[in-house]
Every structure is written in structure tokens, then in C-alpha cells.
Amino acid sequence: MTKDGGKKDNKAAQYGVTPQSVDFNDWYNEVVKKADLADNSPVAGAMVVRPYGSALWENVVRWLDDRFKATGHESLIFPTLIPMNFIMKEADHVEGFAPELFTVNKIGTEELSEPYVMRPTSETIIGHMWSGWLNSYRDLPFLHYQWGSVFRAELRTKAFLRTSEFYWHEGHTAHADENEARAEVRTILDLYHEFCRDVLALPVVRGEKTASERFAGAVSTYSIEGMMRDGKALQSGTSHYLGQNFSKAFDVKFQTREQKEEFAHTTSWAISSRIIGAIIMTHGDDAGLIMPPRIAPIQVVVIPVGRKDNFDEMVAEGEKLAAELRAQGLRVKVDRRDGVTNGFKYNDWELKGVPVRIELGPRDLEQGVVVVKNRHGDEKETLPRAEAVAGMTARLDAAHDWLLGRATEFMLENTVTVDTYEEFKAAIEAGKWVRAFHCGDPESERAIKEDTKATARNVPLDDAEFFAEAEEGVCVHTGRPAAYGKRVIFGRQY
Image (cartoon, rainbow, N blue to C red):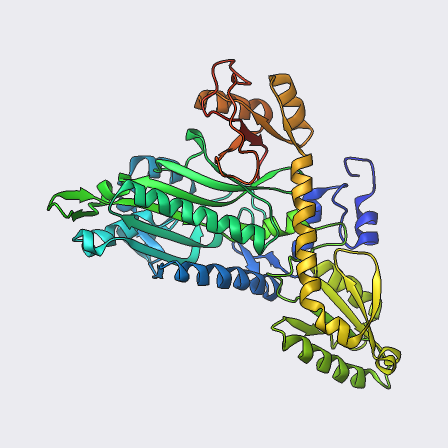
């Protein structure tokens, strides 16, 4: 039995997946598997990403990679293994990652004199190499990034959100001064915001992390935070100003114009494969996924509708229609499966979240029309074929706007402003985000987390799209003066 007393198995059979209102966690896990995004693997805590999920990730990679290169960044490739002594050199860094490290102690049967770690992130090994590449201010800035996987031990795993091996890019840059490095941090944060809003239809809050939520070894950490359909927060990307901490640990220094020796100011930043989890949990509904059109692996699916004696003919006509759509640069799939009912196909593509479905049958062909259905809507439209083709890009853009509008409305409706700790606790228990003043004391944050399971998500930036208002007040928890000149966003997180 489920929390509301319903029989979950019956609900799942009826809807294809367990409804979100019955059990959001089960809904998510079922969607990931039934939509063919990912599956469990024989490696504890790791997932196998299936072709549909891989195609989605490839689209993420392609958009971001193009933008990185357009802003002057260069890709490189570093080893997966990092010497243990590198990790130990930066005290805050090792303290932050020590519980999560995978270590390699042997090659074959031979014990290593010093173990390696599977990279949790690459600041240390990149700093080591930079120390040999950097000589003069003329060499700067270093604007580097790489794509790959990283490894962090996870006790409670969830596909795309928390796995022992996950996929990402990690950007690493070095600069001659703090102002330039901090400008880089904001450039990337704003790029992430643009990607989420304009490509993924995800509203996110840009802000700075509190001291207790910073990346291990950073001076400042900035994040974009999204609200999922169950009200929980998902940290969807981060950008860090590392100051000279790693430069000093790895001797990354250069000669200035004045012939003085100076340590470089460095940054790091990343979006990982957990952004796929954000897409699923922000846009999905009880029928399954709803793919944002601009990132969807398949933007339009064409379903030929015919009998055994004319099915091949309808498939051929479907391919002609698909070719017209592909000529516009759209990603189109023709469902050529034979011996499967049309109803099954419709439900299958609904589950996979394809933004637009086109049905094409013999009568439609005779009349020069097609049947069109948006994934985010309930109604079918019968349109002249030429009109449906010509209007497809605008239809997909409208679907993007609808998804972004719905997600934004949901986030705003489920964020409350409070001034007392009792209000705070009640709102968090109700699954809301909370905007509250806080004194900045890490001990207070820890006490709040123990009491409510809520953490400080970020302090919105002055130019953030949401919740950026400047205000003064007293801490909702301690009663001391607030530290940030505005309210902090708190919420339970993934």
C-alpha cells in the first residue's frame, strides 16, 4: 500500500507509471527505466545509459561544447587516476572529498607504493600540470575544460541524480587577477542560466552558496537551483572562484608585468548528467516524460497508421513526411514497428516525452491532412499536411514556452516568505521552498538541517531573475541580524 492508501501496482498498470501524487520517487525510477533512459548495472551504484538517454546527453554536450568554444575555452583530456598525494595537498579539498574517494591500490597482483584515486574532480592534477605550463602573464588566461566521468562513493543512488560514476564537463581556468577570475565565474554561471532557461525550459535561481555549502577549497561558490515537481531543490550547475588556494598548493605562479612572482587566481565550474534528472522531474507528468523540444533526441515522431495490406505504403509516406520535416533541421523518427497496436505506440511515445506526434493514415493521405498532437496537451488537431509541416518549428517553440511558463509558475507558487521559525518549519514540511533571513552562522545552518532536513540553497544575486530583492531583517533561527542584505532560499534537496 502507498502513503495515501492506494494500491500502487494497480495505479502503475493503469497509467503506465505510478502517478506522481502517489509516490514521486517510484514515478521517477519507473520513468527512467520504462522510457529507456538508463538501467541498473552490475557495478554497485553505477548506471548504464541507454541510447535514448545517451542521445539526450549528447545534445546537452553539443550545445554546451559549442558555447564553451565560442567563448574562447579549449578542451583537453586528463587521466582518470590521480595520485593520492595530490588530493592531500589542499586541506579543505581533501576534507571535503575524503569520504567519497575510490582508491586503486594494485596493478594486477602488485601493490602500488602510493595509491591512486579515481578522480572526484580534477583541480589537483590540472594545477600540477599548469605549474609546468605557466611562466608569464602573457600565458594567461588559461581557459580549459574537459568532458568525462568522475567517481564519488554514494550510499543512496538514484539514476542521473546520485551515482558513483557520473558524467560532466569540468571547466578549469587560471587568471592574472581576482577581478578577471570572478568575471569568468559569472560568465559561466550566466551561460548555465541561459542554457537552462532557453534550451531546457528550466527556471533556475542564480545565487551564491553560503559558507557551509561551498565547494571544498573554494573562496566563493555560485549555483543555479531548480525546483522539481515534488518541491525539492536540485543544484543544477556550479561555478567556483578558488582564489589562490590551489595555485599555492601546486605552485601555479607567473611573472607579472612588473617582474614580480604571483600565484594565479583559478576557477572551476560544471554541469553534470544530473541535469537530465532536472529535465525529468521538472517537466514530467503522470504519463511519463515531457522532453523540452530544443534538447529532445526526437522532436517529432511520425506514426504510420495502416492495415497489414497497406502498412508498408504508409511507412513510405511517413518517411516522405519525415524528410520534409528534417529539411527544416528537425529531429524526426518514423515508427516503423509492425505487429504493434497504434494505441501501444501512442502510449510509448507519450512515455518517452516526444514533443509532437503526427499520425498519418490512408484517409489522411487521400485528404491531404495529418493528425497532430502535442505531448503537453490533450487535444488532437487535423491539419493540412503543408500547414503542419510549415508550422512545426513554431509549434515546438510554443511547447518550449509552455513548459517554461508552467515550471516558473510552479516554482513561484511553491516558494513562501517567512519571518518566524515556526512558519519556516511548517513550510518546509509542506514541501515548499522558503525565503528567510539568516545570520550566516554555519552552526545554525547545521541545526536547521538536523531539525527540518532543509539546507540553504543559495543567496540570490542582485541581478538574479528570481528573488533578488534587497531586504534587511533578523535571522529566522537565531534572532541575530541577517548577514546577506536579502533573504536566503532554503529547501530540501536531491
